[in-house]
Amino acid sequence: MARLIVKSPYFKSDGFGGRNAAGYLRYIATRERVELLPDNRPPIRRQEQLIKKLTKDFPDSKTSAQYEEYTEEPTKYHASEFISSVLENHWPEASQSKVYMKYIATRPRAERLGRYGLFGDEDAVDLQKAMTELSEYSGNVWTHIISLKREDAERLGYDNAKAWRNLLRTHRNEIATAMNIPPGDFRWYAAFHDEGHHPHVHMMAWSAKPGQAYLNQEGIRKIKSELTQDIFQGELLHLYEQKSSSRDELVRQSRKALLELTKRMRSEFCNSLATENKLLELSRSLETVKGKKVYGYLKKPVKAQVDAVVDELAKLPEVEEGYELWWRLQCQVEDFYSERERVRPPLS
Image 1 (cartoon, rainbow, N blue to C red):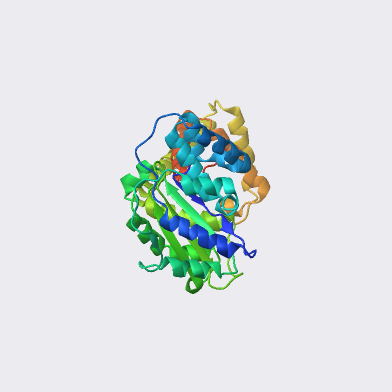
Image 2 (image 1 turned 120 degrees about the vertical axis):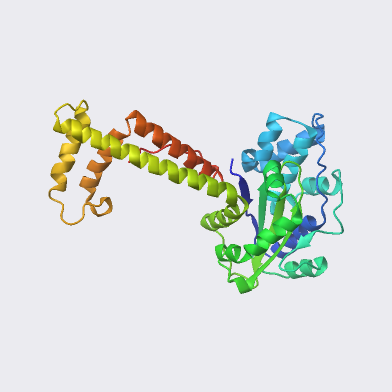
């Protein structure tokens, strides 16, 4: 599971999008946070029925961290967290359902955080003015939901609205660019929700010029990358240093193994016939190569010969050990950004 979760649904400019966006803005600005004291009692029947309907209406919700926590520990607390996350992630559709809106209107409330917690480029946001602005807007409005695990948020200082406000203000231009909006036309409001296991911020973003903005998967990846590098800066720097050191050691071990191999070949005591043959074939091919013998300049057949030699070297224990260490560190870096499963590629 990635360390930072970014989801970016949006309201379409279909005649209802502005009104739906205004309602969503009011919701994120005025809702109270979920009670932080865990309720370990079993979920009530109403919650179970609602979860059954949610997972049927929104199958992708089963891939969320909240659903995984609910299935591992089916409690009232985890049920409440899962239901809230799905309703927020699918607000445009959920806001059209009487069943879901009734739950939102009547669910148990906890600590109230002032009148409302909305912020943007300025601290003092007029909620009614902002809602009117959105209700009259004819373009698409994106609703970024950016969340951390509770332990990461507390350890790194992102368990409060001020930290998130500073982060989003720092990167508002990068987010605008990822959405193909000139920074001068970028409009946004956000609110922090101190949710139980997953503190998160809702950021509504759009262009002053309807039809100008668009956001694809690459844009979402850029937003996630910018925020991840800032939030986890210290940890990533440490990992990059370890990875660089590991890579250098892998190069040293590979070079040492190759030198040992060529020495044995000269003495006619090489015990790896397959590697010897591949090296001899490569040597003959390189005799015909003009200019610098740099991998990037070689023709495809010669590159394939180099790859074959490298993969033979990778079978040596000392090289394998170095590559495995580098790969583990590489996976740790990628875990900050991606939820995909990874398969270690050949060393070549």
